[in-house]
Length: 167
Image (cartoon, rainbow, N blue to C red; front, top):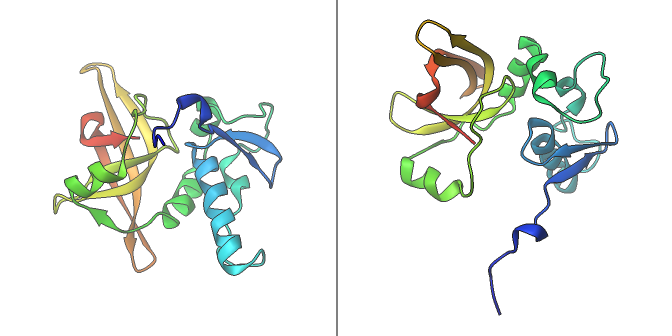
């Protein structure tokens, strides 16, 4: 009996029940759909902890899937609200290595969840609120929001793309 999973057997998309659209599992919307399903199973469909995925979609939607252009249209308020829903747990490098397996996303986009290294050396989940390409130095810098605990959101600005883990 083999425990190896063939790549073709993995699921890459999920249907957002709120919009009936197919979205990538690794996208912000896909991750929220999974969290909502789990919350629904734990506390019922009327749970106050179920988060609407509609905030992740642009106002006038012509595309039926989440694209980079749509993520770039996310408002700061929506990203801020999304950051509130992130876990405030911090992980050591070894713990993070055990959590993350597989390939990493290479291009930072507004609305992507990423891992940032906190000042204490531990890693925490955050969401990109802005991406800036500095032409003179050809450097990509990101601003992020993260859950600071006690229902507070914190931010880090101007992070070099090499200082975040895009996953």
